[in-house]
Image: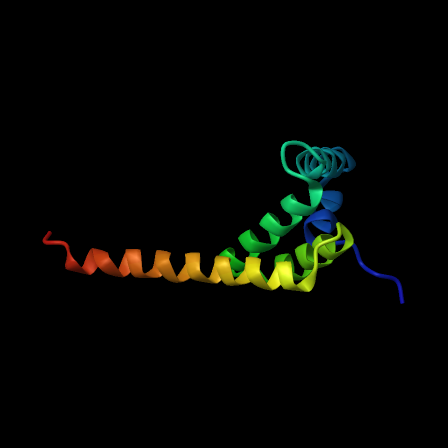
Length: 101
């Protein structure tokens, strides 16, 4: 069975080859080794996907992070951190109920 391209790439490809190329080049530049390794960036991307609650993104970034050398233990910890951030942001927004308007 042929694996489909990730949804964002299918979309940008449907719009135009130029947009698709630009998006892929931007992603490649951002995710390459720099001050942070591509493995570290992949783990960050996974945590962001968890915090944003994007199921497709979680699956895609999990695959990328594992391919970059991350362990499941690292991914689980990153997911736990993202979940805690998400919980904290929910409580922060709930705290606005305490404001006198």
